[in-house]
Structures are given as C-alpha cells and as structure tokens.
Image (tube, rainbow over all chains, first blue to last red; front, side):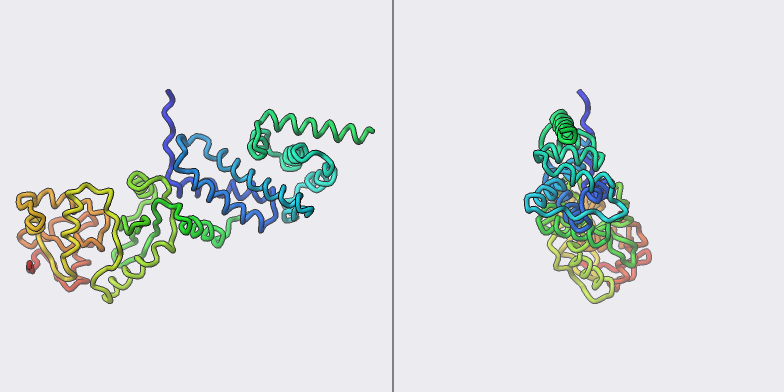
Length: 155
Length: 195
C-alpha cells in the first residue's frame, strides 16, 4: 500500500499553483475572461478540497479544472456565435487564429480537440479532462478532426 | 503575466463570503511584534506570536481542516480591537472565541481566565481554586501555556504565587510589556489583586 501524500493547507496549495493556473488560462482566454476563470477555478478547487484523499499531482488536478472552465467559456462564446476575444497579442499563438477559422465546420468535439492540441499545445490528458472524456477519446477526436480537414482540402 | 493583488483579493473574499474557508487568518502588526490571528466561522481561534507560515498553516489545518486561507478582511474586526487595545483605548474585547477543539479541562481554565479583568493579575493556584480543582495549579499552568488565543484570553495576567512573572509562551518580555500596557508594573514582584 502506498502511503497517501498529506493534503497541504489550502493556502500553500494556492500559492504553489496560482501562477501555473493563470498562465494556462491566459493562453486560452482573453484577460477579463481569464481573470473570471481564475477565481472560478480556485473556488471549485476549494469546494472539492475536503474530499481529496491524496495530494499527488495536485498541479494536474487544478490545471484540469482550469482547462475545463476555459473550454466552457469558449464553447459558450461559439454557441452565442461570438468569436472568442483573442488573448493579448504577445500571447497569441499564430496557429490559434488560423485554426479557429479552418476548423469552423468540424463537429464541436473534434474542433475543440484540434484547436486545443495544435493551437494551444495542450496534451491529450488535459484535453480529455477538459472535454469530459478520456485521453484516448481526445486523441481520436483530434485525429479524426485532422483527417476530416485533409479530406476537405483534397476534395 | 502576473496575478494582480486585486484578482488575488477577489478570490480570497469570494471564498470567505461563500463560507468555504475552514479557517481564515492574517498577520497583524503590534507593539509586541507581528501576530498571527485566525478565525473560524464561530469566532477567533488563534492569536500567536512569532508567526511562521510553515508551522502555523499546518497547525491550523490539523485543528480546523485543510481549507486554511489568508483572508485579511475576515480579520478586520479583530485587528481593529487589537489596535485599540494597544493604543490604550480598549480594556476588553467583544470578539467571540472558538475553543471547541480544546480539551474540556483547558476550556474550563480559559473560561475562568477570561474573567480576569484588564489591569489585574491572578495566580495559577487561584485559577485552580476557581474551577474547583485547588490542587491542580500545575495543570492550570500547562493549560495556560498552550493558550491558543493570547492577549484576548489574557494569560499574561496570571503570575506565580509570590507575584513573580514565572512564564509565558510568548516570552517574559512580552508578558511584562502587556502588563505594563495595562498599568501593572511587573519587575520581579507584582502586587496581587485577587478578588
């Protein structure tokens, strides 16, 4: 039996993780949205904190929460027909704007997987968590999205 | 890409407003050095000297739960009353305290201690008598030594049978300074004023 790693006092967890969370959110969202999502991320973490049993990989845990919240914001904006506000110019990855445009016709899940993988450079575990599915499902969604794009270009 | 103080405060205040913190704390400046002041939803649960985040956060988490969060706003009332006390403008505190996690014997000692008024001193033996355990002066001393809420629960007002200062978890210098603030000159001897 592995001994569970003790859960740190929340203040210590928060000060250790806040920079990483804010960096992740700032890559996905414009400043104002990133700030709202930051607050929501740590409120959700705080609500769930008492039920944590093991402190291993708390960084992955909180980044997953953050990514899920960011995706909800992006999804809401695309349902509204609004383009998401782009992050500040210095943080924009050129691939992002292009992918947003190229992938507009893909089914939502494939589009999200493609944009997150190739536009934002998230790994499949994070994308899976963000989309509420598995790492494998995220990998499949991204590759079937890419296949669809290729077919369309050659067709 | 930095997190503004404003954003940080917004999160902390939102967390406290939702009642999500098991215990909120902040540091408070005072003439006897910085104090760590902490409170649960029920009341003040810690005033400690020589704050040390590593030690204090773990200790608060063990007693009250892992959701320990620095929330200056939640400590504002305690800060204001402590400021007034140190300015000589306040002789008693109106802050509720949360001693529910303490052993029953220690709670009885602290209840009795809370009745010792500003500017007076009493002895360990006298407190022992008041709680109906006249032979437990030493145990009373132990309970006071572990008083989690210094100043507001005034263990600095308890001295040895001969009037000597004896001991104080925050150091004798602080005990002397607090008594002096209350108008009690305590070199080696103090005059007892026991009701």
